[in-house]
Picture 1 (tube, rainbow, N blue to C red):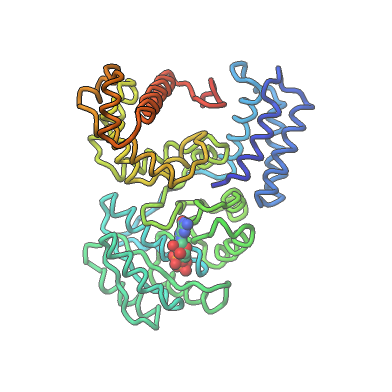
Picture 2 (cartoon, protein in one colour):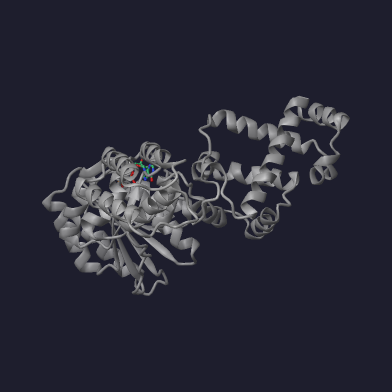
Length: 434
Ligand code: GDP
C-alpha cells in the first residue's frame, strides 16, 4: 500500500535529517521532492500545488517546535497536511428505520463485495442488515451476493433477476416491519458511465430515499476514477465513497484527491478480497501509512473485532507492563495465523519486506519449539540451559540454533515493548511523538 509514495517521500525527510535547523534552502529542496513524489503518485496537479505551498509556508513559518529536529518537524507538517487533504472522518449516517444504503459504482470496482462487507460490518455492530441484489446488469453479481450473504449470515433478497426496479419494489415490501434495520442495495454498474445506468440509479434513489449513497472507487484506477466519481456525484449526490483495493499497489492519487475534487468524504476502505478486509476510514491512519508510520490502530481494531476480547485485554495489559511470556508469544502466534501475517506486517511501522511462505514456515517452527517447552520454561525462559535447549530442539524437530534464535528474538521483542512502554517509537523516528 502506497509503497512508491512512501519511499519517495522518505527521501525528502532524509534530506533534512542531521540538519541543524530548517533553512529556506533545505526546505525548498525537500518540498521539491514532496512535489515530485505526489505527482508520481498520480495526485492531481492542482492538489499538489496547493499542498506544497501549504507545507512550505508552515515549514518556514514561526511554528518550529524546539523539541523536534528539522526532519521530524517536516514529517509532522507533511502529516498534518495529508490529514487535512484526506478530509475529516464522517461515519455512516443511518437515520431512518429501515435505513437504505445504496451501493453504486462501475463494474469491477468492488461494489458487490463492498455491499457484503458493509453488511458484515453492521452486523458486527449489532445491527440487523439485509442485502438486496439489484445488479441485474452483471450476470454473476446476484449469485455472488447470495454466496457472500450466506458466508456472513445476512439474508439476500433477489427477486426478478431481470428488472432492478421490480427487485427494489419487492424488497421494500418485504423489509417493511420485518425488523431488519439497514437495507443495503447492490445496484447495477456498467463498464463506463452511461445514461441508462444513471436513470435507473436516479429512479431507485427516488424510490428508497436512501440515507447513504456510497460510490465504490477503485484505488488502482488513478485519476480516471476520480473523474468518474465527480460525474456520479453530480448526478446522484453521493454521500460518500468506499475506496477499494487499497491493498494493491495503489499509488495514493485517488484517496488523496477525491475529497478535494468532489467535496464528499471517504467512509470506508477495502483492503482485500475477504469480507473482513474492510476498515472505517481514518485520515490520520492513512497518513501514517503513507508516511511509513504504520497503521497500528487499524490493526488493533481488526484484532479487536476478530479475537476473543478478554484474552486480548489480558495480553494488552501484559504488553504494556512488558510481562509478555513465551506462553503469550505462542498464543499470539495462533492469533497472527488467524489474521494473516501479510496484513499484520503491512500494518506495522518499519516492518521488513518478508517472503510470506518462509514466514509461515518460521511461525510453525516457533510454535513447535514453544510447544516442546514445559510451562515453567515458557514462563521463565531464563531457566532454559544448554541441556534443556537440546531437549526442546529434539522434541520440536529443530536445532539448538533454532531454539537460540527464538529466545533471542523473544528478548528483542521484550526490549521493544519496554520502548513502547516508555512512549518511544522504535526505528528511524526514535523520539518522535505525535
Ligand atoms: P463489482 O462489479 O463492482 O460488483 O465488483 P466485485 O465486487 O465483483 O469486485 C471485483 C473484483 O475486485 C473481485 O474479484 C473482488 O474480489 C475484488 N475486490 C473487491 N474489493 C477489493 C479490495 O478491497 N481489495 C482487493 N484486492 N480486491 C477487491
